[in-house]
Image 1 (cartoon, rainbow, N blue to C red):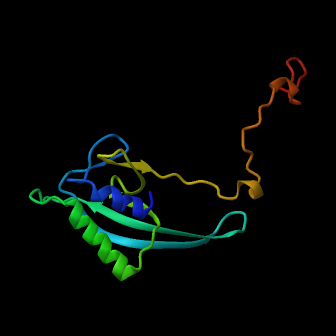
Image 2: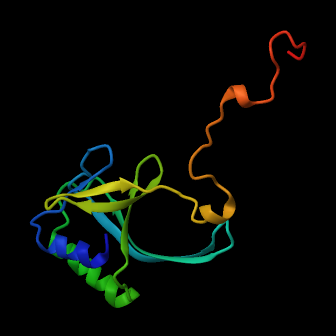
Image 3: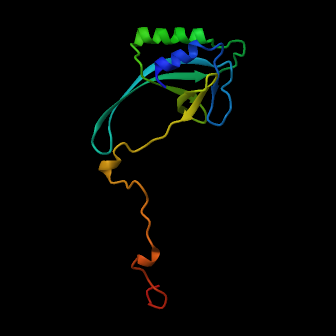
Amino acid sequence: MKLSVFKENVSNLNELNFILPNGAFVDPHFHITEIGLIQKDFVDCGGTKREERLISFQLWHANDFEHRLSPQKLLNIIKTGENQLGLTDEEVEIEYQGTTIGKYALSFDGINFFLHNKQTACLAEDSCGIPTEKQKVRLSDLNSCKPGSGCC
């Protein structure tokens, strides 16, 4: 989800709800402890130089049960990030602590934001020789030992 879409969705809400991939809600007293611009320059396994830019929000909760982040407060945090970091309309990624720090993509159903597990992938499948589909082999076509041939 692009930052512009995220901000538009937030601006229409009375409260913020994030739902984890397992269906559980992030505790309502979460904080956004940081907003950041992540730029990753890398070379894929096919030798192509690539660049990735993301806006990252770190969701965190503590024993502060008395506070709840309002949509307007979140929009103010985003505005500060835009002013101080020069944020543009990049994809938003959520960081959230599970058994390790998870990175999630977002979707929205009009009420709740849903965190979706991100996956690794080969970005150069066409140049590194990974077959698109596992080849099917008939065992009878293989040169293998046959019963009674003495090779087994």
